[in-house]
Length: 400
Image (cartoon, rainbow, N blue to C red):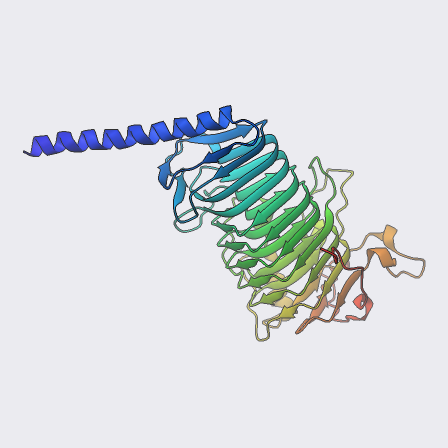
């Protein structure tokens, strides 16, 4: 009897594995043979996949699941490929209504796609967040006309929702938690980040321009009407990653980019740096890219609500240690490193209007210029005088 039961179980599990392999083969075949206007349906249930699903050089294709709680693509036992889903060299692609989890690398990567929508997707790594998780949950790079709506990203060792070197982007009504960076906009132009919930990450929302990338300059980014709350999670980025320098307890960080507006947000209970405006020099990394501009400019921080009460800067990060030494548990909510481009100064030593950092009308919006430009990095005297920054820039995308 036990032998018969053993044989039955072997046959049953062999049948299950064969069925899973058949589904994987069918899905990849459909992606290869997809024609203009096709909808590739992902069936309900948990589908175990061992290889990257790849869509290349296609137009007007929708990949649709039965719902985030009904279709689960699991890459827990992935054998080949780094990504879960990869889309390249395409136009007008929609991915919607499913969960994707536990790939070796990025969960969904799209590159060189013109016209892209992620809708109602959960992208996650299960278990405790760790540095061996993939870098990005949702990862459009070098794309145009990107829409990321009502998505959830969990557990990325770099950024949950990352948009890089792209143009014309919106990220809205998304939830990012337990990532190193919740939402990151990098070397990207014309981006709207609004009505999202970024919570329990190391850093909530990052807007960066970095060197050594094909697209040299981002900017024209608006971050508004978001809830950026308790981003105090440990930094678990692999060693050497730039986000590894983000201190736990960072709400918003604007690094070396231009023309950024941060307004009408609730930025609450981020223990180290609620909002930081910094140059690339703050990383202390060498700059080899001669065309790179390491300074932030035309930044406008206004009409946000910051939390009251004491703070507790991390002691596991150089910036956190600096803030603890300089401010104790009363770290100002808006911090500026004070490092300026001398080419942007007028004859009287003031910053030319088009490059100014402007800060106005923030509730509990205490401020400090840490004067990292003076004497040496992290050695300057603190200035809490907000008057030089009491100005305004035009509001971005006011007619959205």
